[in-house]
Amino acid sequence: MSKGSATVTIISLIALLSVPGAPAHAWGSEGHHIIADIAEQYLEPATAHQVHELLALENVTTLAAVSTWADDIRPQRPETARWHYVNIPINPPTGTPAAYDAARDCPTGDCVLAAIGRFKEVLHETVGSPRERLEALKWLVHLVGDINQPLHASDNADRGGNDVHVIFMGRSTNLHAVWDTGILANAGITDERAYALSLARSISSAEAEQWRSGTPADWACDSYGIARNLIYGVWPHSPGVLPPSYEQRAIYVAQVQLEKAGVRLAAVLNGALR
Image (tube, rainbow, N blue to C red; front, side, top):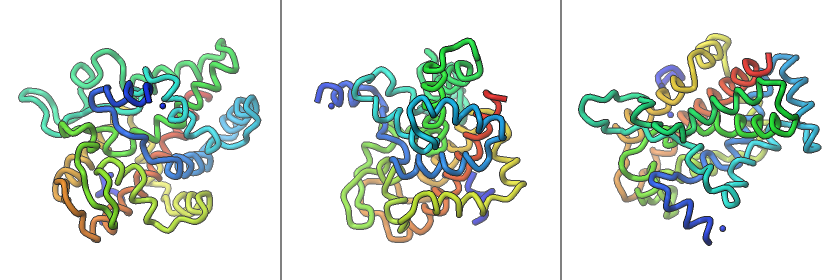
């Protein structure tokens, strides 16, 4: 299969789980670190300079260092839970598209796509305080990664796969967690940055150009297509034991989605800081 064909607290916890469709943390720390490291390879020099000036406010030097901040603060800010995903229905109601529909999927502007739009504006506007722009940067680093996890851009009336209990590689888990962390956990990654740089080197100029084109809504539709056609389509997706072949097929799709996310994150930051 070619890359182009893969078009893949107690009170606080109660508050989070009470949100309909609220998924787990996309990609886990490993995936978000890899995405951030890939993105840095595609930052324009002026963008990289501004990014490093903002990161210096927290005494860190890499995007990976802030890539999981948006997940870390969710127990203290449960109202942000919906900003991590968009529920595009796998089986859309009659008369509505099998694609992102803002009126249907994000009617109150409380989803990942609307959040990316808001934070991109904050980062772009130099009238904001440095701290406000730094927070916007941290949100963007995370949320652009989120929309490239297929189960953060789709829903099959199962809370983004959280309600689909499966056995994956001998462990009891759920379909969403398989895609957040399970696939990468079985990839044998011992050095996240080295892995990220290896993925970045494998990206052709044509692929990078294709992936950075379009809008975040287009990218969400790309992820949705993987969920609809593969994860909820031809691949096993009912409760039960996932076959060993699942990991073999899924790791390729996950790797390409990490690559896309890195390229697209860089495109968002270049656009906001140019």
